[in-house]
Length: 143
Image 1 (cartoon, one colour):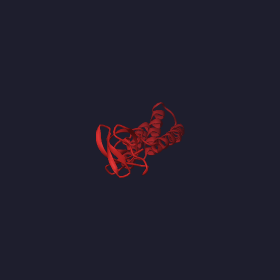
Image 2 (cartoon, helix red, strand yellow):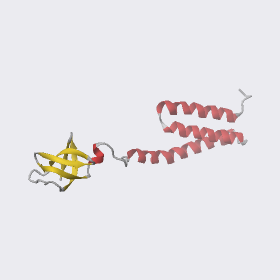
Image 3 (tube, helix red, strand yellow):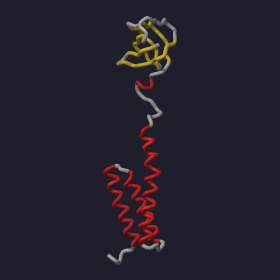
């Protein structure tokens, strides 16, 4: 055991922390692994055991304190790119057949859709532009 340098033990520890990172997808293990690599560098440069442990702790705590809040903010944000029917909400369409509360047809994003008016008292004539507020099944709800 005494034949192996301290920096090798730190790298073994870093690899050992990398395994639960991959298995559990908890980024904290990765930050601890980076701290262990910093401890290995300190050992390789001739730092004492106490300094190695202090560097490991300082780097690990600093990474967790800085990276975790940033990652939590990014996880909480909605994706900027909408897809599917979410991408159609808010788009403009052209009325192809009169649209009222009972139905009609529109051209939306290059496709023909069945549509119905959100306001039951309102009707839209051929050629008018309408805004899509919701998609219910295969029917666009327009205003």
